[in-house]
Amino acid sequence: MAPQVLILNGPNLNLLGQRQPEIYGAETLADVETACAALAASLGLGTDCRQSNHEGELVTWIQDARATAAAIIINPGAYSHTSVAILDALNAYDGLVLEVHISNIHQREAFRHHSYVSRRAEGVIAGFGTEGYLLALRRAASLLAP
Ligand code: DHK
Image 1: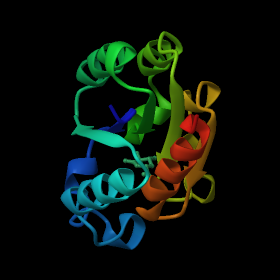
Image 2: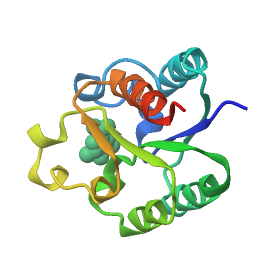
Image 3: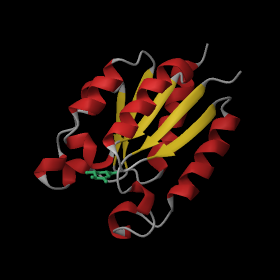
Image 4: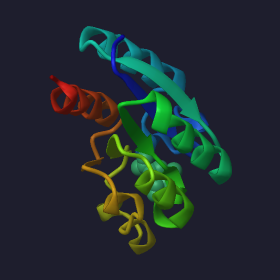
């Protein structure tokens, strides 16, 4: 079976395409997930795309991924900057973790400059728009290649 990649999006990312498009772009989350699934298939990977506005639900999905996913691509949204619980869940996960931010968080408010998740992520992509998810998938494919 193709290695599975869990693509996780945190709070407010369900509003992609409607929310501050000058920052987050015009594509919807459904557009992004469709593009990820197509690219993943061409790279020999499977995807499971999920979004939640709830920290505990994201933690549970990360815990579940211990048994099901070879990699997690995560945009934790605002939880990047606040959530020790998500970091702890990722620290209990043995697979590859790649972090994506659509915007360049380092160009924005100071409170966005620090991400707890970056302590665990093998790589971080920021400021590449929604293309960042596709770049992360390509990186996952090369790191997971036998
Ligand atoms: C998305 C969010 O919702 C913000 O809270 C982060 C991130 C940045 C992004 O760029 O994708 O600060």
